Length: 417
Image (tube, rainbow, N blue to C red):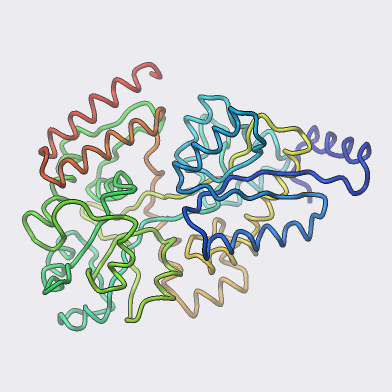
């Protein structure tokens, strides 16, 4: 089955007939991996398998740091005339990429819309804007709660019953906090807005509108959310004071510095391989409701790409998101399979039967919402991040910090309204 539009397919055929049989289309793909190692090897393996099946396409995968680094490097390459046909970038970058006229909608590149509809709707939410699909999910996640079952047992808690409410989080956290071990750590560097959005959703409020035009940082329920986060350390003593580092939290959990941590499901395979204790994975606890934002990256195809390169890019994207590859990716990394069909493969059915925690992030999609995204996303997000950290460190009250962030967001978004 072909997924290419008639125009794209016709162009591809014309180019194919005009070129030598061994002609090679070269693609440059920017990919968000901060350091080498397991993830790099997994992507390299997928690319190598793709090139074996498609000897006329060569893929140069450029590993470009975190999501923000990847956006900067990919857009710098485009501005300087360097080759860049596609990238995996933040799913929340879509508004800005559309505004800058840098990407093309997938609706213009595929004939069979069933392919677009084959992905989980919750993972498509950030990439579908004003009736068109601008991003295809790949390295996707929700926030999950990791917990040390051995420490639960030592504290007299049921290791099969992690917190399901904020009240449970505090009461269990107090029993788990002893010596050099805290009950809970929620990271407040790296992606503080992401964790905060999860807490806000659980408190029954969203921090953004669905059209990218407004935020509600100064809503009383949003302020109450930040006050709760701060209270975990200031009032209840179950979390360290100040900020908790995103980049070192996994190691802190593995070393027993915290009995519970909130982090991306993308850490799941690494925790599984390195934990020297019995651990569990659960959905995030709720207050007024359960919930987590989705997270991670989408595939984008850049506008300044030839028809031949667009066809080759589509082949690569369809290969990497196909159920079999998505299943392998999920098993190797802990990120979600991006489609229901991935979880119907023999490989992922067998893996999740043996290791049920691999289903938690997928199951949480039932309660998930789109990740925080607006026009001027990076600048609006930075304002929210600064407000969160100012409150957690005691530099400002939650109300003052969020009110300032709201005023800044209003200034940035005014022109887009």
